Length: 488
Image 1 (cartoon, rainbow, N blue to C red):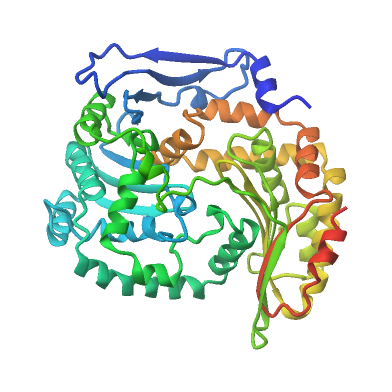
Image 2: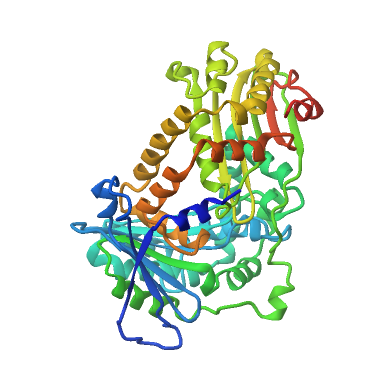
């Protein structure tokens, strides 16, 4: 089968590339490459003008491997700047699992130059917002500020990232905060189920570990463990400095060079062998985990199959398939988007059911999350397995065209605002190594055919092992073998 990328190369999608002639201020850190401009699509006159008029994303890569990317939005008075790091819970080991999330907490507890109080006052007096989050593959710190405060925001971001005090007393206090956070997360059934799903689907590999880490690690991680994590994971090639809004790319490069220019480019031999770094591949394992509560009248279930990586030829077909399958929520009324959702709604088999598609660097999870009354669990699973087994044969041209429109709308709405644009820049540079313009994304979606979607459904569902996590009133849930034998 011809891949999506091959088909795109046959269509004359012209990439206009602009080269910066700005002089290199620090040659040891500042090897300037190219900037990615809007995709020109003269061969497709049907593209709306707002797609072709999107601002340029400028990208500079330093000799250390550090990348700076920004999109200046005309008329904007505010900016979002941040640091996207290719580091998350999947790169942790059993010994330090939870370190990335622990550091996220400690970053706001004071640095060598600022106390926690001074940090809070400085951000508040700027009228800015400082935030951070940790995922399985990425750690992100970003600030939303006025245009004039971008240099101060970069100073603060570098300070909390690279010079966090990690005071032992503050670490001890923060343990209780994170343990309380863990209890709150475990009360949210969807979070609990999806953590268990990753734990069973990727058992034995980094992707199976939780973001918060086990309770024992939260209680025992030391200042040295946190410092070692920074030294082994905060490397220049793993970082992207991203900005959007009222941002000048040249100034952002100067600031990045000043504050992050001293980052090392690779680990030394001892660090590569240390128990602080995990570089294993995510290997999908067909399995399930079931936690039954006899007192619970509701069942929370996630059924997943191995999906695609960010760069797989199946990535966009699966995005379209997710949109096509859709979701159903009884509280929102009966508006099913696919035959599966129609069957669930018509027979009132679930309170809600939704499709998820999670991509990682080398694998992914594609599946369904459902909440149902305990007595309907068996009928729901029968309905789900029957529909998934037939999906590759039942997708129509009309389904695909409707899903294309919905997916395009979702993509564009996800780029509404400086923070969303900045997030998109940082994430794409870490996952793709470049920024795809909305025009290119639309072209990729438009290129998809019914056969592409059917091939993706066949690849994911037909006679394939699955992973499942279920919590609550699940005594009516069919066995793993039954679900597996009904996958074709």
